[in-house]
Image (cartoon, rainbow, N blue to C red; front, side, top):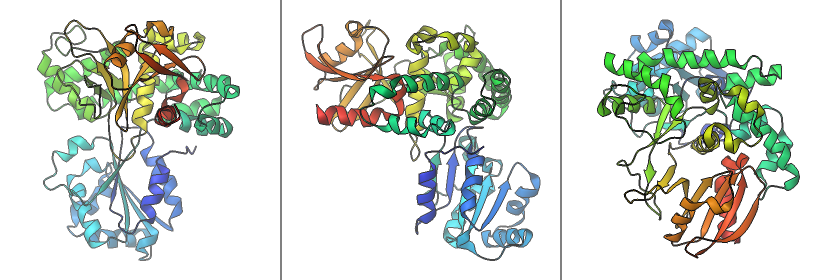
Length: 449
């Protein structure tokens, strides 16, 4: 089953460029990297697919030092003619060969007319073993679990996808978008899950697929850990971390353990590098750019909300909840919207920020802050009334502008309010299915009002 991914546009642009460099497609396991490139390869006359987990495919990089000889051997084996511009060489699981990573630069320098794509899941760890990484000789694209627009495309909901991109969204489309987003919030964005649900049109088989994917990640633990102790700590984190969904965490004694702060921090860094569990740190800034404050406690961001739903055992409850803003102590939607914002990073990997007040004994915390030109826009994700937005109002009171956003279950609207201290501000209320469209709505909000 083919999924339309937003990164396909960047792939086509890369394909047509004269100054094209070997492309490394980065992303966690099972987010669809191999399938994406196999479909992309249909636009070429010749396609060579190497999987470096196979010894027979690693052979070419172990046998030859010259990339021209590697390509010549591959063409002979596949019975291909020497049509380099019409040929795509795909080096899958490239993290299995540090030599293959090193040789990427020579594809660019010696055979620039050949189109070369590499993909890997644990590249951050493999790069540490590469003696001479081809800096400036490769380029990157990032792939994540499917976001909501990609989910709609997979479900063949083209009309709804068009409505999602309309700014502002029409009231007539609200109920249908809510219904689809509710399904998406349960399944998450892992391609295998969406494929199963789309083909079977039922959630009965989803627990089996969730279990398979979750266990695969847990069994991959040894590839993340740099020592036996770190492997044990990572295993403990994987088993306990879902309970901290969208919470700020302390490393010391994490998950009711006896592990020290430094040990947990190093293990968390490995999981963050693998993009399985990421650390989202706050900023205390009210102006752009929002500097990351590593002295403050971070939140945990998991690869996919659907996997966390399964790990927490809350799938049945989610099917019965109408307003997902209240689901799992209000933690589900903030996590999912953060996941969607991360999914937009196709060229450069950037984590969003949340905001905390830089003052002792202050509990003021805003779910997200989004830069727009010279403004840092606060975003709260709440189901309650506007009168309860105390942290957002605290931000506005000391900000140089008066724009704020609330993401919730209701419909799109812009309202005028005052903070508790009497400062007037504009509040844009957005339905929570608009996470991927947040940047477009901020531009509309600031420029039109």
